[in-house]
Image (cartoon, rainbow, N blue to C red; front, side, top):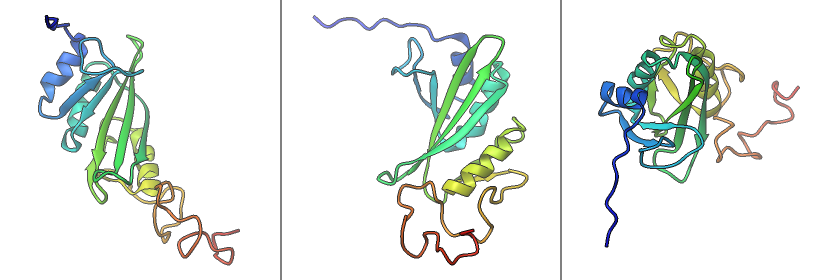
Length: 172
């Protein structure tokens, strides 16, 4: 005999964010009553829903920008995962948003919502090549403007023409 699935209600903030951007939230992990387990509640969102979901989370009290990062998966068509961590200091909660972007695809900037996101977006742009539409100063942060490639991508060569040449002006 098959067990009957029990419906567990999601926390109010999760339900509210899902209601605010219903097309953008593709999955929820790590929350009791959601469709998966993780160490931190994680909202899997569409690239187009990146900013609306972040705005809905901010409205729910997740107004402390913790960090923004990206991970390269060259074997996938949408090779880059963007990861956003926000904290609700009053409730003591941490949440993660994740979206997958293709090479050359941009997402909306979170800088208008979280001032600290501007620098983190520049770092992700500089080292992994993800563009952020609406960032006030999207240019290389750590590397020279004429640098070729994105050194944190897994297929970035360690030797050869794009590797750092000892005679290069950047070698010293």
